[in-house]
Length: 298
Image (cartoon, rainbow, N blue to C red; front, side):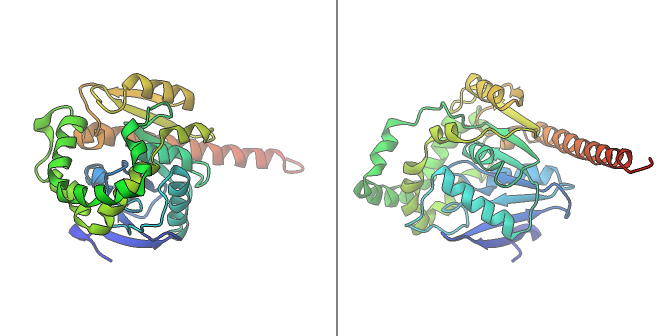
């Protein structure tokens, strides 16, 4: 199906429900698979895709968010998210993708890297495994509270979204683009999505990352916001060191580098893609030389 501005949107079925994937750019490898934050949507990554028209992008709406289905019986823990992402990429025939993750999406990228055979990771404002889970989220283990909270979040979605963007995401309130509040709030106007939002929040636990095998042998870039009020830059630095990643700080930037520093992020992506392609060409050349050297009589 064709989405807005001529973008192709595919719906991929998983065992839990359908996921919407916006496909942008020419058909080339590696595909850049973009994963958004916990309560966000693929809207986060559109500025980067707009700025990098020569790259192949898959902007994924995770289950329960954006346009994707919102089944009440699904689980939204990290393992379930990884399983569904692997299903999506397999259905689309995507091999050795570059996983680009923002916030919770960065945690998903790390957790999924080995299963989907990622060729590299771009982790932006990443959730690290040592991030403390807010105590209030534990109250969402109670179904009765979730049942009350869902409709309330739907009713107040616009002021809540505006508050989060201004006070918790962007470093400068004036930098919030016009219309962004509505674009993020719109999906939560759907009763089914609003009803599962408390379940998504209840299932979220950064400590799950601690049980994931750290991906090795692939280039990883971690970028933190110098004024990120949600992820401490020093915590992101430690996580980058544990991953063996290249680490950068976007000084003066908050929790949404894809929207606050799109040009700089596009340059980082281009450099990472160039590095991946260069290393792959070198690997093929080395393999060819070894094959010649091992030929009898050579």
